[in-house]
Image 1 (tube, helix red, strand yellow):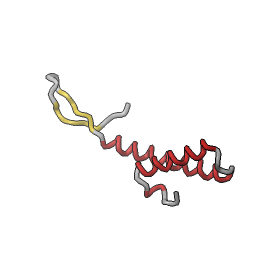
Image 2 (cartoon, helix red, strand yellow):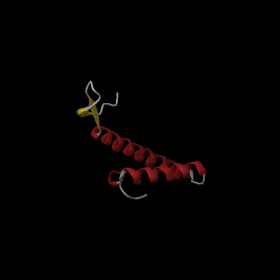
Image 3 (cartoon, one colour):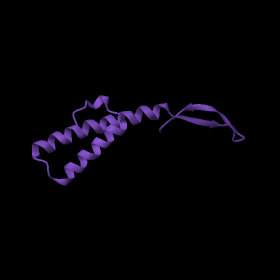
Image 4 (cartoon, helix red, strand yellow):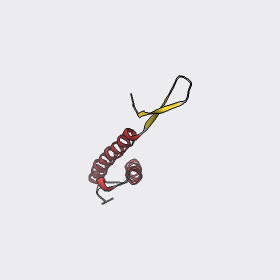
Length: 79
């Protein structure tokens, strides 16, 4: 849990976040530990969201012409 968050891959950040959630849900952490876990968990959540946003920006949607044939690509629009 000591690795800098900005160096974690999406998968590593998500796995650590799941571990933190499990630990918080178990209730076995002290108040100070729970606060520290929550703060790190929030930063991990932000890291995961940033990585997902970056991946989504790289996705391209296939444009289709009137005959239903692929006519090229365009950037993915989430909206």
